[in-house]
Length: 324
Image (cartoon, rainbow, N blue to C red):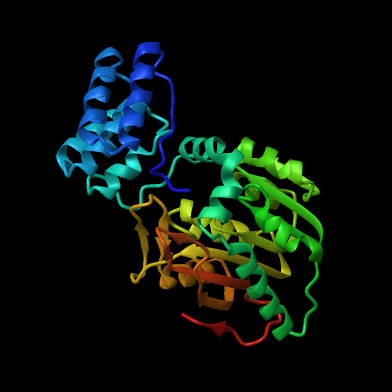
């Protein structure tokens, strides 16, 4: 799932909404000119129709009209202050906004709510998602190298989604907590019966509450979560505060050749290895394992990524293993 998928919000005008749907049908058939014409008609009826402006921006971009696309995305942004559509990210991608623009909670929540019912099929079936297995293999390697048994008293699954990560680790965890911003994703997780506790919350808010209550976890997992966050420093610092002294923090990121953070055409963030290492070090965490790993395939090609396992710097640990 990517941030380029359309997120429908009614204009309040039934005719404008219908024309918007007709435009998407034209777009699906490859008729860009027809889609643009119908979207323009819809916007004449509902000038503050954010979804139509956003769709028009996408159409113009596909037609090579950068300035027209920017103008449409600006209209979408102005009509939608909470940025449900992700117009600010599109503007950044087109060079008309901050490249490391943070995603709004409203955008991420609506994105996942709208895709929750078909999330597993799309991710595992169509994109060959294998993040949980890669993470379990990496954690197993670190634990065994340190002479530790693969068993955790408590695990926190950040951005748990529908529970794919929880399912991979449930057999070796006594108490499993999951948190996700999307109520629809949490509902999907609940139906699987994997978690002892589920919470619908923004991850950093949840971690702050857990730290205030002196909660500690033996394993913190973030599978395919940080692609929706720009700077990793705040989140790694928050995670360090709830990690047990001998705890393990395991996560995946998409990556690129640079050192910092890059917004990809998919509207997902890629993090350079240097940024990852710096964020962990600043949080008082030491890398125990960092290696290249592709957790998904898009358009028939593996997506570049990293799998990382870290521990508190004071923890007993084996020498770090690194593949990148």
